[in-house]
Image (cartoon, rainbow over all chains, first blue to last red; front, side):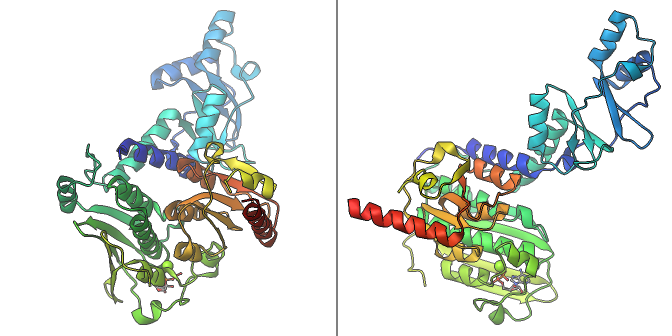
Length: 315
Length: 116
Ligand SMILES: Nc1ncnc2c1ncn2[C@@H]1O[C@H](COP(=O)(O)OP(=O)(O)O)[C@@H](O)[C@H]1O
Ligand SMILES: [Mg+2]
């Protein structure tokens, strides 16, 4: 089997451009002008700030136009550089609402061949709350990828066969992930990365499925029921160990929580297809061994072991 | 049955993943409870659901689904489509309700069985 790790990173970046919102990537400091300036004034500003265009806003910060370096050059050519911009600026401005994902921003930048997009407060508002360029997006992506990648430590191995050498290396370096509480949308990322990771180790499909599901349910519980925590996935010669620790509030009655159908999830979560009280029972079903320690003071520690070799019949 | 046969059987629209419609379907799972999917689905199955959040796609990806059919004409959000594209999972949409969808698939499977 030869799969390479860059594939996995691409998948991640691809996911992220749909998940990261314009709001998170944009610069909030917008350099702008009111309508009553000349092209020369704008030209000086563009030069000073080394930028290639500025939005023109009214008193309420609503966008009414945009002047780019091209417009300034044209103004020089045609001899109206000392005139006010009002009659010359382009009023068809391509903007983007702040709650759109950055993939829409990338599409617009490409489609309209513009270098920047003023960001509006919402779809039906013209009020400007930021400005976004391709490099803003790349910067944000890098930051996010980096913070995720740091947790997927040292996986750049050339030989993806499950060799003794590889297992030894992995043994020393478990995967570590932070998991945020109350972050339903990104829940599952740990499970997804873990699944790809095990696929690259060439472990059987059935075992990978079980690892992925155990990870996902444990991760979902941290997201839904706790204040946040972390997950560690350890690969040993004979088994995978999944640790899910959180900072609380703990489970008052673990035995009760393990009962199929027991849940404290909100109606909102249930409308999304979760909170059926089947998470812990599912983990129990797929893991070869499960330990849960929980205290109302220190939080919950879940440890699930899945054998990599011969599979135990699913209960 | 292959994933692309669902377009005809369910009068479905392909939302993404056109390049991955040639896979052989081994099983179907129909549910609006993701935990059920996590508990009972098999590899290379097609998921039919009335849910449209990104977590549906995540569940499908993690359980080895080869396509998702959104029933009742529901459209998933952009994030869900992005996630599906990233993981090469075709998304289909049909106006059929869940029961009608299942019935049509069952009929098609029976027909296939007879023609063998
Ligand atoms: N990490 C955790 N911290 C606090 N409570 C938890 C945690 N994990 C599970 N629980 C409790 O156990 C219950 C059952 O969990 P689970 O079987 O995963 O079902 P569900 O998540 O669908 O509610 C949850 O509703 C919650 O009350
Ligand atoms: Mg749960």
